[in-house]
Image 1 (cartoon, rainbow, N blue to C red):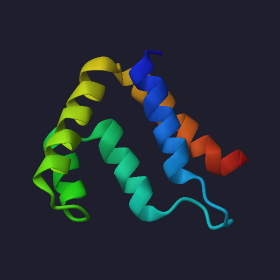
Image 2: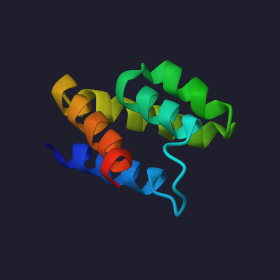
Image 3: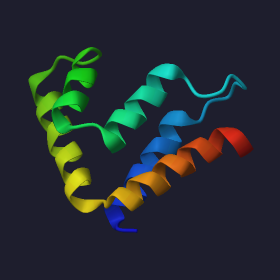
Image 4: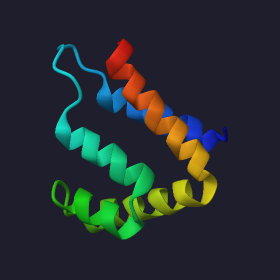
Length: 90
């Protein structure tokens, strides 16, 4: 897996770990799903609900496009499976 993939996994891990035993937060679950499998436009629209800063949205789109250009569908599936495993085994 490329550096970008490793960064996605680290970011997902940091976002998804919490002190409670409440399972995955639906908002974060949707965020990860759109980040890995949505279009850049879908992901930016999703982020816009929480942060409507033009610079943040521009960088969000750049990062999403970079991930889409760097990761294969197989990489994205592995990342999704890893995130799920955090809550099944964590």
